[in-house]
Image (cartoon, rainbow, N blue to C red; front, side, top):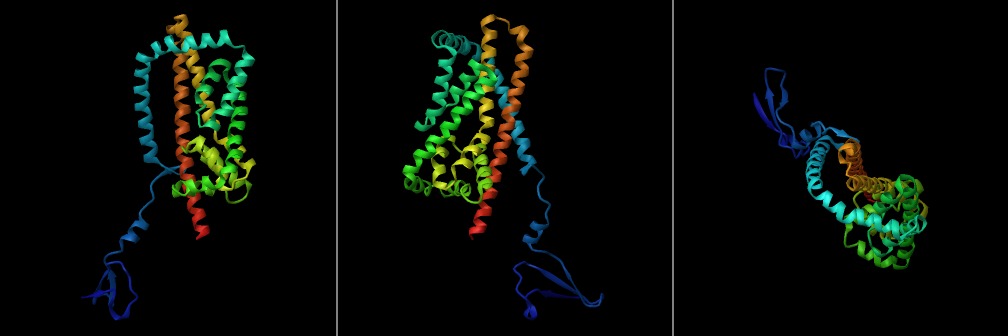
Length: 298
């Protein structure tokens, strides 16, 4: 029995540390004892995934959400009633006594439409819309305001196109993701914009940065409206839940309304968990989209 290294006799170079044993008892065959680490890694089974997201990540995310929910319950139990009594109920009384419903709806529409132009968050206004008008009317006010709120920065940003591109050069990884939305056909742009809106990328910044990615307006608008549905529905649900709890506090009917409020809290938690899941999924899809674009360019 003899030993043979894989570099002998002019063999083609193999970077893997392979050792072969020559067995004289079995027709002189060489037996390979080891394989390269790269081959072992390739042969390893891939991790289990669900919708492209590793299962272990979903388990960790679920445990985190449960822990945050427990902490949030105790915080709300001790701090929620004073906050509702001193802030929410007086605010609701003030707005109903000061503004008529049409005027209040116009003010909320204007704030949702104009706040993003000045880099101001519009989520509190969305909460107020849910508290004041309920599901349907609040949804119509917010969606119409969002359509204006994402369009104005898009057109204003066209006047500062070069400055925005220079600013994006400072963040090449995020810029590569955003520029991936500007390539391909209209459906590709629509899909990429929707994924960006679902992902954790800042909503207000993308309103201005989108113009530097050469994405067209209609895919940008429709993709933004689709990708922001989770944020809109969650904001409305938050406002309605706050109003329901405030009504219970005002009328001192906590014991009778506890089951309904508990179901609302559970539904809200499921909605937030779904939003987090799709945000993680969208982030991974954007990463794959960026890699595909880099391969095409390379």
